[in-house]
View (cartoon, one colour):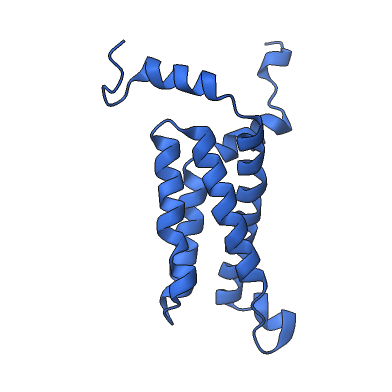
Length: 143
């Protein structure tokens, strides 16, 4: 079977797929919840419902807005998480199980920020609205 240009997945396609998926924000939400529940830290704990809302937007058909919301909150989470400096320096920051989860959360947050910002910047809202009208998941459109 011969491969055509249509079969090849480009780097942009991969970024767009990550940015429009509802799974990465929920993954970051779960990791942030696990990290900041014990001991309870109220400010980082607020990111979980906000990231869950961005996942809901994506599932509801607002992929561009969901990607923008995901990029914004993931970026803020990474900025706040990176300013924390535990005693013991860099080795203690990432060389424990908690540090590994923290590093994973920060990595996923950074990728979410880049991919979500790309989707938000290059998104086509007209095509997205047409897709929502075509699917009409909840019977909102009477066309």
